[in-house]
Length: 357
Ligand SMILES: Nc1nc2c(ncn2[C@@H]2O[C@H](COP(=O)(O)OP(=O)(O)OP(=O)(O)O)[C@@H](O)[C@H]2O)c(=O)[nH]1
Ligand SMILES: [Mg+2]
Image (cartoon, rainbow, N blue to C red; front, side, top):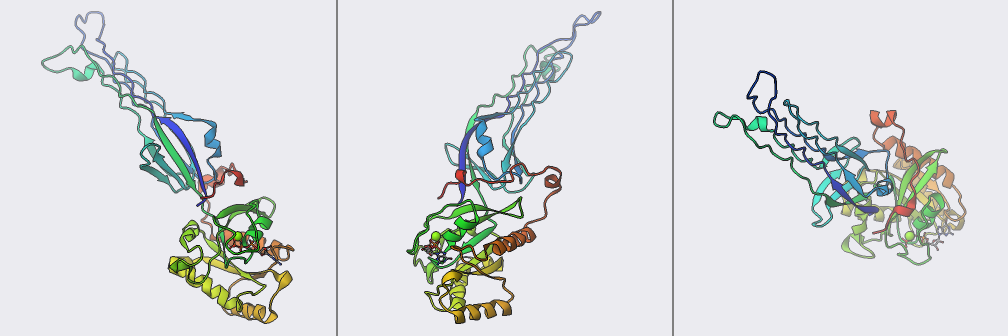
């Protein structure tokens, strides 16, 4: 999972104290109680923000505090409520209690607000305690105190495009050519043990996130190779790019494609409904022209977009990136009005904050 993590201390505002006071007016010898209530403390609220894709900016501060409620005053004046502390967080942020690891909230939508810690209630002023038996109460309530708590934030990023294929197909080579990610590449199988995430830029200023995951093999669902557990990292990815090894060490490219589809299906049949495309890699050392023709025909008949590329020489990569970018755009949910009004603040995502898991 592409997880970014941090700890922070939050403290909602305490409630303002209630006031003890009596009316003092000319010609009113025994004015009744008129102490107002304290205001409520401000909540600490997290708000999902589509323009953010890392927790980096939140690290600039360690404490996030809601404002304290104002104390009540005489003449029945209630204290003002404290202002909330609204913290903008990226979508996909999971909030836990830092000590118990208890799940406090999950922010999954743009503009979604969740109260993470409630402000303290304001105390009642003495006016509230007046009764038939006690017309002049000499006490008022203090506002509720709020203690700071430590919380842990985890961000699970969702890639736009996932590269899937046999070990050695060239997935890591490809992601290192088209994105900011620099995973290990080697000639043996199962070089990649953890997913890698990279940002691909296209059309000058647009970008999408691509994920490179460990290779899959036949029987992966039954635990062969590295198994398919890590497919959960790309479960919500909207586009799958099936990368086939053009050097054809496994024989039929159509079969290679179908084997991977089968393993993906065993993990989660719903993933077969995602948009997908096929790319035949290693065109610079193509193993069999017949195999290439067979997969080309198969893709034509099934209306599957097909790319012929070489991650090493760069052949076909520009077209691939452009087309993937367009697929991502058409599969993204329409931007909310909020996004249209406020331009995204963090257009570029750096890979350095992403920890592998
Ligand atoms: N000739 C040629 N070799 C390539 C190309 N792309 C990748 N390779 C080579 O194929 C081998 C495997 O590449 P990787 O990128 O590590 O493959 P992978 O799919 O990430 O493999 P796993 O992580 O094991 O699943 C390396 O030796 C690469 O240099 C290509 O376009 N042409
Ligand atoms: Mg790899």
